[in-house]
Image (cartoon, rainbow, N blue to C red; front, side, top):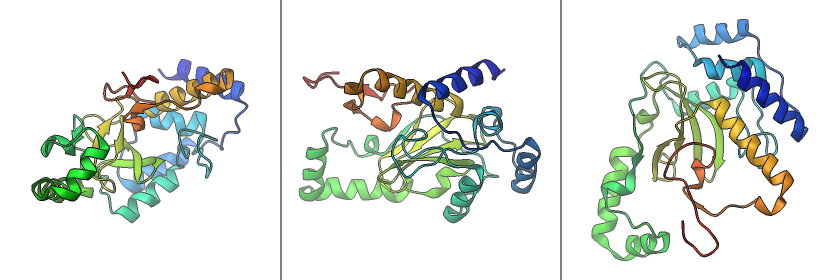
Length: 231
């Protein structure tokens, strides 16, 4: 089912001359699943066993999206630190944008001004954060990649949308949780396509966009802004 995409990914890795981390054996992965009492999504299993077990880097966009993909061991370790329960289902089925609950300003400067000067606005924000800035909302997910500045990408392993990648911009930054509507193989391949584009034309290295955390996904909230500021 995934072999065609895997072959395509490996070809793109070769074009970029990337050094992949070693894969993990299916036997070892089965032991991890048994220990955690979960069944990992097939797309994730294929990534770990046929592409690489990880791809993490301290350098932005060196080995993978942003700071690279975590190894399965790092993902499990990070989850333990955050006390995320993998045996509970991830319940979100659509984006949860905190600003929708307090009529947040789209313009960041206006938002900051109102937060500093509008007591009612500040009160509404605090009420929303108290309700939704909750790690229980991350149940059934594994962290797989760090975007930076407190935002992370998480893979759903338990729930109706198992296999999907979500952007966690809520727990630390208080913005929300957003689905990329893709699996990890497509997430990684979309990043490869972007790096190939930049290799051909370095002037394309930076893109100005709304909701940049969603760049390698398929979410309509990601919108490129041209130099004149229009979408």
